[in-house]
Length: 72
Image (cartoon, rainbow, N blue to C red; front, side, top):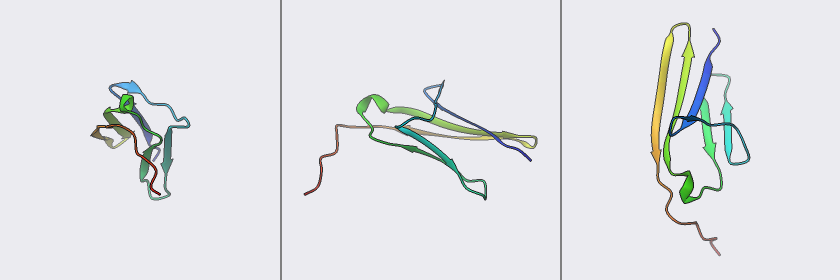
């Protein structure tokens, strides 16, 4: 059974890029990884999976405050 996976930020489609990494495992686990975040990346992120049996989704709110400083 094939699965269509959709991801969005604030209701707008989120495409894979240098900052946005999307992966899946053989057991059907999908991962959305966000890299080098800034405060502008704050918002609601949603992943939705759809197949013949139905659909499910998960939404998380991300708040980015400031920038991480390197640890020395």
